[in-house]
Length: 459
Figure 1 (tube, rainbow, N blue to C red):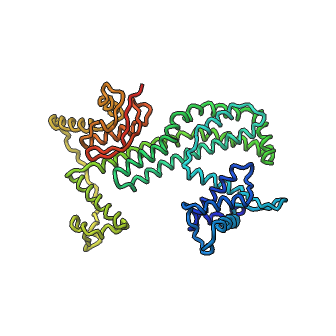
Figure 2: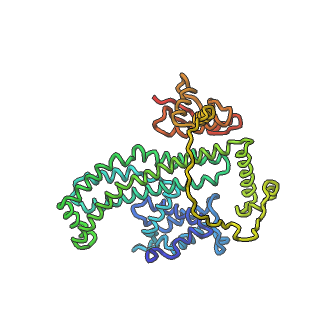
Figure 3: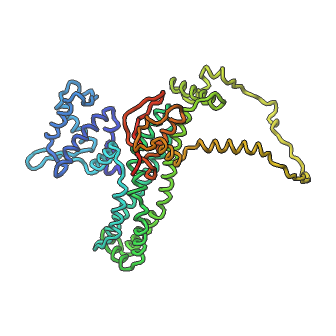
């Protein structure tokens, strides 16, 4: 790679002036991207950078050699540095006019960085439709078509793996959120917006692979059994890649089997994505419920102790290993060391083999009263579990004859009511629910602050 890209190519984006470099690169790319080619007169670009450095919101360029330099000098300096680092090249045409071009690899890297900065999501539907259309098409260039199918399949699989990793990243980040507000913000304003709405929901509906996969696999398997297709495709690929006909034929079979295997094994990735999506939403809600729950029992007291320790560690930016230096712990827990007189104190002598004498098994009558009490406790516990069906029924009960109702109009007497509102908001993303939601402004009721939303019955 470094035979193509300059060793110092990434220096601008890792220097103290990285913000200035990036903003200048984006301005230059924006101008060149609107031209018929990436070549633009140097003076035009210098004018644009001069205008940038004259703006009040321009990032400061921390270079000692530029002290006292005007905006034009900074613009020319920036063009020289970008040329030095291998981002652009400056050439002089026959009219002695200098023209600036981005290097080919720099254009690809800039496009990728811009997509990352904009949070661009992969359009799975585009890849799936492209593969589906190419597989069904009749063409005189089967070799080119097969390579396009392989490339789009690779992009599709890579996108699914990135989505899988993205959800795992959100799960790992849950532990960084210290308050209920932060957890709910991460769930509703970040995760649902960037993962569920943009990618996951479409993957289960409009971009669902299952609608196209059977025909794609069937047609590819038929092609692999067609000697005419394999010969014609191998001949074209042999010419494109400049290899022998026999090697190209092996490559055709390899391509076909790789694509078929990718679609057949796609269920494993999709299953893991579903599991992680469920895990994240459940973890977020459970963590929020834990933060909202307070009681005087042992669990509640331990929770308060752990929250206090965490706040102290965060406040003093203490390493978790330094937890024993927190003063108030001495009043809660006494930690002491224990020594043993002999390291063989844990030794258990070997017992000889004993004869087994079975005991008598008696039929004991069950305690019906105790059994009934346990069944009642179990039923009460199950009654408190908030399932999708219960949330659906709760929404219909609260709406009554009304078609819509704001979440702030739902009962909000205690934590249990607030948790129900959280589940209503969470399940409102699912298409099999009896209602939809529409976000509104922030509300605070009885000490509970949340973004209000309208609950509207479907149909």
